[in-house]
Image 1 (cartoon, rainbow, N blue to C red):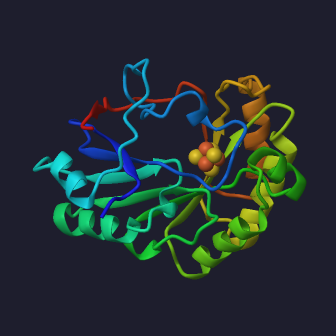
Image 2: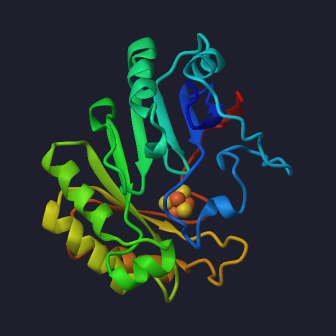
Length: 240
Ligand code: SF4
């Protein structure tokens, strides 16, 4: 029974596990994975790509072994395309008493019961802009965001700030959408990191501040992640 997991990293300090999944149903022009498909939290990114062999549930548990596990992050492409996502998430909760965090684009309603934290990334809310960036319609992702909130799922959101494309005006529209669901939902702004084949540059600190101010007009809990990260990150080592 193969999952969509192909790469696993672990932090000996925080005891966090990163599971990276293959396969996405959006085609974002600014996707960081156009640069590489390694966990970008590794200190050194190898030149050749990771082996895209898919792991079974047993492979995943064997790779983690008897290490202590605090939290498991599910990301990469989009984990919700994995038909075994619920079994994997439940198995990790049962075996390691781990907290599970899911990062998703929201096109597929996830098995939210097995996650302690769901970060639904909203690329844009303007239909034409969303289609231009992702290649797909925005309506399903927004509907699923509302559904997850209504179901009481532990929901937060995130967007990438791209200068003169998805910047303060669109970020304010996204924040207004989230606030209409609940102004308490945490919202994080990530600075765009240039990837091969895309025309945009990194946002300046001033552009990030403008976007943050625009989001704060609607939401109470807004944070910003500048490119390169802010604050200490735990060292991740490759398990597979
Ligand atoms: S949804 Fe995420 S993983 Fe999928 S293409 Fe967009 S940025 Fe990449």
